[in-house]
Image 1 (cartoon, rainbow, N blue to C red):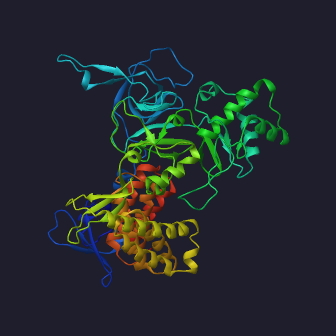
Image 2 (image 1 turned 30 degrees about the vertical axis):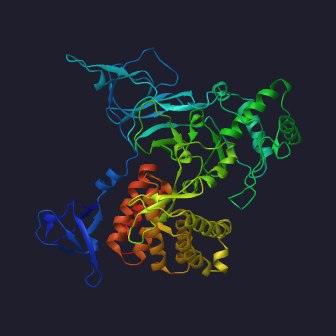
Image 3 (image 1 turned 90 degrees about the vertical axis):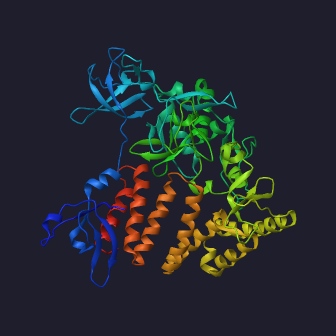
Length: 552
């Protein structure tokens, strides 16, 4: 495979300078040269690190801040709009993205000038509407629309109004407002909410008041370290949750008295904020008018990430017109837990997930080795406390063996959850990780398809790195990556970080070529999620430069 590397500064062969489609081979420590293949040259050449640099052009192709849409022509249906930077009718523009908060398309005019054009004011060719004798156009409307949830009519959902390709940005959105998080001092957060965003209500307030609101405001969070049976605030338990009377009393004690005529509306406003806010930046939470309509799925079709002052939602898979848009409310790591644990984590949002993944009988993160020793297939656990047939040969465990394996899995799970709740245990008992990994053999967990083994390998890799056991860390990280590659199969921030960590370990071990290629893979994933100047992207590029010069 060709690499984003150029040849520079060669005196003996100046004709090779500027070549940018070379293929890196291995680095020869003794000679201090990279083995490279250059198009048009019959032999592999040895080139010093000082004569190889990253190709800015190739890196720019990897690091794409915006996916350009198709060309369109401006055609206003009104004389102007306060949210629209006016561009003359007939102007050809390149559509960059859709900003949901303003219902505008961000476009690029000739000369690289950026502008905003209101939804409905752009004409675009539509091949599906072409007649035999002419060209058909249609107005570009919002690519997303709010509609009734297919299973719960009283709830709303967000739907796509056109097709999206995997990796394409579906929409951007700026927050309606941002509130500082005062840690455990909820009263100060509520005071800020009332004084800054309710009393001085903006034009977006009526739209926000239509969002979903829980019956009460949950003051507590997860209070137990046992994930299999956690203690959550119950929205119907008045002793653990905040009702209107307690809300007003707390605010009054903080020197903030809500006007009587506004109390009922602010009570709803506070519950809407509590039900729909997202953590952004450091110690802040924000409310988004459109993003708040997006429901959770344990197999989401969009990824939400922060960008600039707002968020962007990107398609993780191909999305068809009319399909519901979903995100995950929990971290990627939480999505690698089985359905029973995911449901407990989601209780903090006061609902049980019924997505396709949670409704399926197969538990896609609980992979067991095939009953036949000669087969390399995997048999997956089922929600009904059973194990399905091998997906390769169809062999099945008998009921007695199933009960034995699941009992061994449950015993290992309890010990593993103790470590997840308190990783410091490993420092005092380093042998516990190997003991538990050995215990997984008793329930025949597949090393690249079972979530407990992946979790133990993840912790083992971190501990090995801290103790200087680089080769061990490298081996464990490879196993973790194999689990993610088999299970996730989509863009993931955590997967990108793990890929970068794997490259770090390869570099420390002197596996320079593999380290460089792994950094390229990490860059491709992280650059699709973060902006070009985000440190998640720039740090990887700097590490690539260091590896190319054979230093880390």
